[in-house]
Length: 207
Image 1: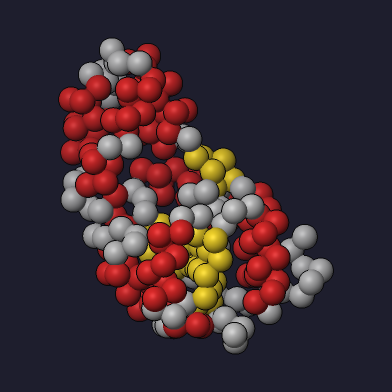
Image 2: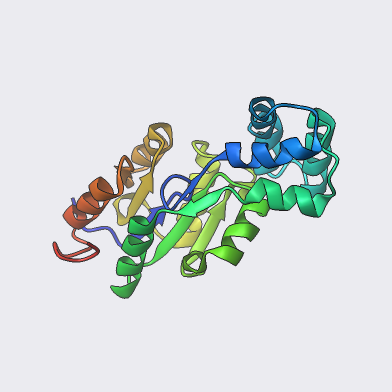
């Protein structure tokens, strides 16, 4: 297989870890539900609609308040909801190594504007990508074909020119069907080894 020209990164569980349980614990101080019930609401169909651009931030806030009884204002809500991320440092370092070699990189994520605003503000590495293909802006979520088409348009590449890293096999299936090279993120070490094998890094780089 030829060496890819572009690397596309999923965000959650690839570059940053996340835990909605952290948000649920904070919400419980301002609502009547227990953390497990709050977490279920936060990851429900309401989130799907928010992350596909079918509702605004305010509408999402209002729906979650109705479902949980949350009594805080929208600013408090946003801080609780979005502060769930920690960087996966070996993957951040891998991205930096690719950038140092002039490899174009993109973020390709099922996500929402609250999460992106928080990550952009708190994690400087996030600003160092050539582009961002985000479900709430595209109006579609992986593994729907529409969002992969958007990634191809934005990157200017198709097929095996694209190397895509994601932790969810179902998201890689659609990419493979379009001819992309793919890496399933299981551990950062395995991902780094696979990127080296692709020819984008020498065997000493990034580690």
